[in-house]
Amino acid sequence: MKTFSNTYIFVFSTVMVMLVATLLSFVAEKLKPFQEKNVEVEKKLDILRSVDIARDIEDIKDKDTYVEEAYEENITKSFVVDATGELKEGVEAFTVNLKAELAKSAEERSLPVFVYTEEDGTEIYIMPLEGKGLWGPIWGYISLEEDMSTIYGAIFAHAKETPGLGAEINTDWYQSQYLGKKIFDDTGNFTSIRVVKGGADPSDPHAVDAISGGTITSVALQEMMEECLGNYVTFFKNKSN
Image (cartoon, rainbow, N blue to C red; front, side):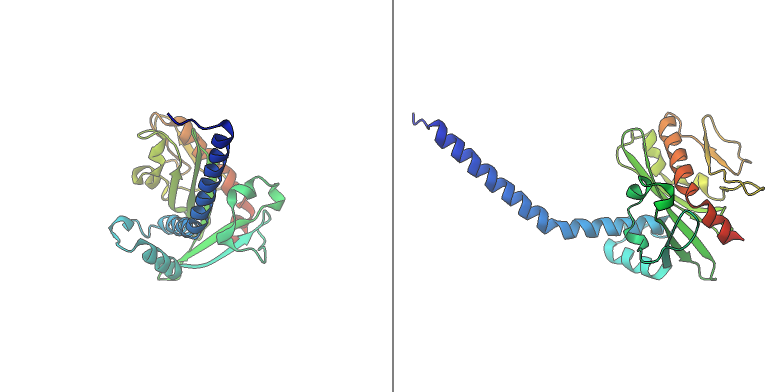
């Protein structure tokens, strides 16, 4: 049996590692534009779904083209505001990384707003959400009617929540609870939306049912909404006046 010296084995292993690393780097670089495009399309799709557009995306053959065209047609403008509700010039809403912004002080944050215009000219305002669930990140978008209080639509997603439990935040039945709920009370105080274990009172405009067996994720979503939408309170109040 032929044997190899330790030096040969070391050199051979080093060369193989370098070749594999080079190949992986090359493949990653080539795939990067496609990955970035997929992320962009998914983000646009979530924004559209928050205003009940593209819910039937699974039936569409050319998903990317459909999303791009629907976004261009329906999302008529976007902008960025600060904590005081003032416009921030020179910042593109779509490129803002909300997770990074939330790590900054409230005064430094850039807060994206997207606008969907209905056929009658009514404007619906869409805000992103970012938070942490039981096992990983959760995120989504909330759209508000022109009174800046009534929820027009909601879309939530997750990375690792438990199927059948916390993962239910990504289902139509759960998200539909938020439609028509209000994030301000009658006196103008910001309430956000509470999740109620055991079931919310249907007449309560500020509460929805928690997910049975998924209370921790439900509470995490409540906290995400309160923190993220809380950043926009001054903007909401200025816009509704």
